[in-house]
Each structure stands twice: as structure tokens, then as C-alpha cells.
Image 1 (tube, rainbow, N blue to C red):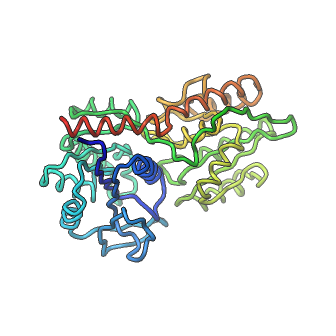
Image 2: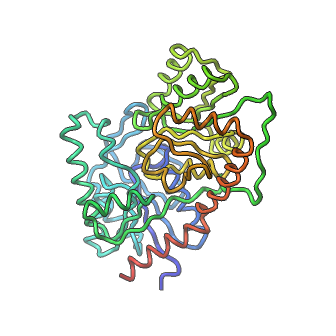
Image 3: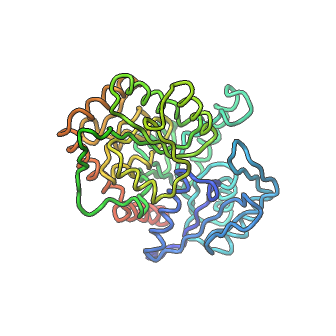
Length: 384
């Protein structure tokens, strides 16, 4: 009965915005469509002009549009009315919401009123983002947490990107069907068919890499402190940081003027293409992850697909994928991060073993593994 599903993704984040949610939606969309399913995306009209969207992307009109810290923002008017009409037009078997606010709220109301099952991916620790709202966090944090919990209790099913997110939701009394399904790798990051270890000559610097949105919650200045501290101990390290964000320029100032790092020690790459990022993963010896609020950290799987082990600060998205002494390390602070980087850099055998284990780990994030799990969850909701 459900061999070919009509699925509607509803998201507040989409192009020209970039980030983990957008990458996740694009990966799911491509792979589901490749398997014959009809996937549509409903999102916000950020530009009020041509977005060059494919025909399966539908934009809700937003009369209020602005830039906030260089990010496109848009506020819809009569979101539910537009959502209802689009849902009536698309006739989905299931609605998949990627945010609890704005369009996510309109999607929930539409699903309830039109008797269409709705699932929700819990992408973020939403209460950790209260600093972007110009109101006291003592007020906004409990309000956001209460609202998201209420939203979770209204949907028919929840996808948790990691097991710690699922446990957290269950501890809040959320009892709807719930499945841990991380986002799948996009084809550009897919692991190669065979493993090839990276051999570094003695005169080559040990290359650290990170890709991140440079904003407060991602903790990007930690990366600068790390490479500066390492070069006080050992001059054979260099780091590349790829990304964008509100702190991009201030990171340059802090790195080159305050910490006195040189371009040979630290290189910034602004908003590279996915193909460029894939090459940077392959060129790196070690991937560094500084965020402690991500619910998955898709970049960890992308890095491992290139055979690049990971050292990550502890956080909810790291624990399912990073396994100590196997494909990397999870650490508690800067000092422990320094120790683990030095350990791997100076132990060629350990580094090569970790590369291979990282490459093996990434296979768990291939679409052919995760798409059947997503479809099985959809069908369990539809049949339940």
C-alpha cells in the first residue's frame, strides 16, 4: 500500500541558508526521490525573488524579510492558510516537520485538521538557542522548553538524531513512537569503496581540520585556542577552518592579532563548496569538533567517511559515533584535547588504525542503511 510515498518536508531552514538541517533535508530528499518516492519541501520565502528552486520546493510568502547577523530571516503571514492549501494540493501520505516553530506549528495544525500523520525530527537542543532572542534567558529558556515538549506530545512520531536525544525526550514524559535515525551522508561525502591510509612524511605538518558555523553556540574560538596551544608545544601542526557565520571576522582578528598565529599555522576557508569540503576532509589528518550542543554532528560522519578520525568535545551528538581509542576520542576540555591530539600525531600505528575504523564507522551513515529505517518508521506511523 505504501510502496511509493508522498512525503512533505516542512522546514524553517532552507536555501539560501545553509547548515546541518538543510544538508540533512537535501540528503533525505535526494535518496527518497531516487527510490521513487514523491518528496516536496515547504519552506519560507527568504528573498521575495527567484530562488532557482526545483519544482518540488514551495515557498510560503513572507512579507517581513531581513538580515540578522548576516543570516536571512523571514516571517510568514497567514502561515496556516498557505500551509493548508499546499497540503491540500500535495495530498501527502505523511508530513515530516523539521522545526517546532513557525511553519512547524502550521504543519502540525494542518496535519491534525486534515487527518494526516505527522512526524518531527528533533534537530536541536532548542533551549540552548535562547541567546539569539533579545529577551532575558531566565524567561525564554523555560518557555521554549515547555513549548517544544508540548509540540512533541502532539505529533504522531519523533525521529531523534542520537540516542541521548531520545533518552532526554523520554525523561520529559514524551511517549509517542520514537526512533533514533541519524541523517544520512550526501553522495559527495560517501566513503570510497576501499580504504587507503593517509601516509604523512616526517617533514609534513600534522593537519587538523574543522568545518563549522562560526556562532556562539558552536564554540569556534576553542579551535583557535587549540592550534595556538599546540604550536607552543610543537611547531609541526597546522589547522584549516572552513565555515561562515557571525563570528567569522572576529575569529580572524583573534587568531592573527591576539594569538599571533600565522597563515601557515591557521587557514580559513569561507563557505567552500561541498566538493571542496570533501577534499579538505581527505587532506586532513584529524578532525576537531568544538560544539557541545549538536544533536548529531553530521560533519563527524562526513569526516570519518574520508578516513579522518575525530576528537570532539563531549556533547549529545558525539556519543553515538565517536568511540574512544577506536575512531577518535571524546574529551572534556582543552587540556585533554591537546593531549589526545599529541598522542595520535606521535603514534603512526594508532593513527592508521583509527583512520580505518573511522572509515568503517561511516558506512553506518550510508543512505542504503538509513533510508530503509526511515521508511519503516514512516510506515509504522501510517499503519499505527
